Amino acid sequence: MDFSSDQPGRGKVLLKLFISTFYLSAFTFGGGYVIVTLMKRKFVDEYHWIEEQEMLDLVAIAQSAPGPIAVNGAIVVGYKLAGIPGLLISILATILPPFIILSVISLFYTAFRENTYVGKALAGMQAGVGAVIADVVLNMGRDAAREKDALNILIMAAAFAAAFFLEVNVVYIILACAALGVVRTLLSHRKKVQQ
Amino acid sequence: MILLKLFLSFLQIGAFSFGGGYAAVPLIQDQVVSIHSWMTMGEFTDLITISQMTPGPIAVNSATFVGLRMAGLPGAVIATLGCILPSCIIVSILAYVYLHFRKLDMIQGVLKSLRPAVIAMIAVAGLDIIISSFWNGAGFTASFSSVNWIAAGIFAAAVILLRKFKQPPIRVMLLCGLLGLIFL
Image (tube, rainbow over all chains, first blue to last red; front, side, top):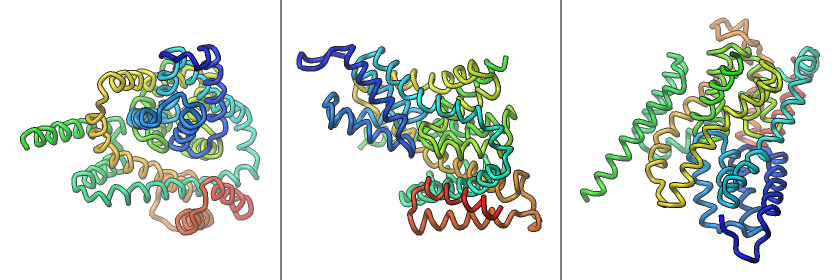
């Protein structure tokens, strides 16, 4: 994209983009929502490369699209700042840290897992991971139930039954719900037009 | 052949995980454990555990880990590419549409219907992990004698720490690991 004269050159922007995205990706624990907040702080508040309102919309895009939010956030920010090269640079910087870390862990995993003590610690952590996911689901489910939208609650129950009892492939469940969402949005548009 | 399978599997994971964070977990489980049997449920849970303790998206972590184990470095690269390719295409299109038309209400309307389904599917993935943990990797059985009560106790303690005392997940999981080391 265009840069006004007081901004650094393209090469420098790409380098700075790579370093800051790599750093954010390597040290952000806690998932995509955390990393997009830190991206906002870096690129809006610190570098002043993106305006606040535009950043909020870009984050909305990153959250609406499928795929990891951290990767989506890197795509929108990279694309906005330096077009396709920026996009490629920021994706690379985002996936390199987890790629390297998981590669190293994978090398040691088998030997690690066979160790009795590691096995016991991991078994304890499995119970912990179950609890973490249960906590996330309870929070999300409570927020969804608060909206008091009968259709949404029906979708939640039906999706649960389909996935847990009928073991339907989750891709089909998502496609069905997306189709339902399209119909719903079209119907509400029509209602608005009639009013 | 395995490279193609890895690519297509992670392409689906990238294309259909809406909502970030845990939304990818049920899809990864479906592809990696149920459909292709690249991992056991126990190994899958280890992978989610490792992803909790390391930075980076769960889907990218899984692609690297599963790819490496199934087909070495090329497998890891191919699986990771498959995982991020849908994002690249879809997000670029959305960013283009946004920058030109500034309209996103259809996408947000669709997301509104997807969110409850995503919550339900994360719940199912979580239940599977809990069942695997309580029954030592075997499936659910109605007999109470086969339950690992210590794992169940650790789970209960973790839920209380998370919900009542609002402890951060990483700290809770480290504590669970310590409890496992002592009591399991």
